[in-house]
Length: 434
Image (cartoon, rainbow, N blue to C red; front, side, top):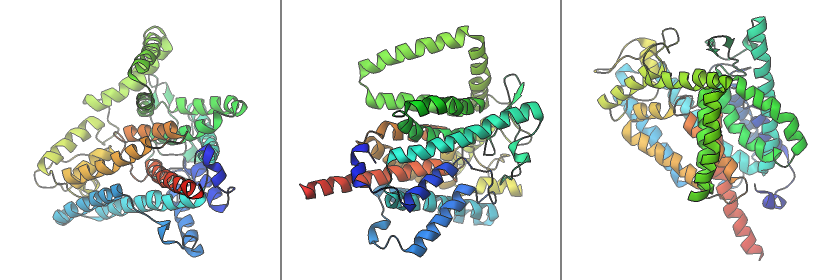
């Protein structure tokens, strides 16, 4: 996908345009969704898969392929299934729903997405064009909802359908304002879309100054109005990791000094910045480490959920099966010697995998995830730091977000796998033509 390789790619065709459309639809995590288990991006991906199958466009046997780390992902899934079989007497529909949702998400957003990207033969710059449009749509929705919710008393969910019924009302800045949700059920979910799309959009806009000056204020305003502590921390840490990956020790130290000192001064001496930091970041830290005052209704907060997750893991180190946390909450029946936690999931992708698939499944997933990070670090294309930024940000944010059915992280896994394969193909073709 690098610019020097675009001569090997044809002009954007049907599959390239359809992939751009998927990027544009990515912010619609809940808005206009057909059901809680069939959001718009998933529905669109299914349609494109059916078109691909009917068109027999992948007649060659290498249209689908496996990498070694895929076997670890399959192994992690099997571990969760085996744990579910062990606790089968306590299983129910929630277990089946979660297992199917995980399987479908991986199949469509990772396995099929690799074939889709490969067939599209589209440059990273062209993906960036679609990402700009996706961010503009998402930001416009967020800005509109911020003013409509705070000054006119209605949300987007009051005028367009959303695929979930439970839509939280979050207050911010000393409870003076309501946080907009955007095109998803929660502000933090919309912020994760920014983590995925901003790197691609930045890659395109860096060479288009006028467009960057016109669009960046809108996109930045949309992101700020989400007041997402998780996204702010994830993107900050991602930027640090990308710089560490790129710089030497001395350059890194100098950059950190010149970056951190002004930031600390801003937080200490500028009242607005101080309020923003205390109310946004401080609230999230309180939620993670302090009990009480952070729960919503009858649902457990992160502090209670994570403590219960640790206890469940210690009592069942080989897992309790996919979706069992949700099933326990739904049925009210606890497993032997296990605590009851009032939540439909452990509010962490990695915590859910650890509790569901056990230590072996968790380690196998870790092999897969780290394998994709290492593959991204080996990319030599100019978009490498942008891909790493998106991957790092989503990886970090999923430490406090469960929703494995979101397409963003799986899309980056698919993109990295496809780019690795494309680079090998380009090198072989280059050597053949010499």
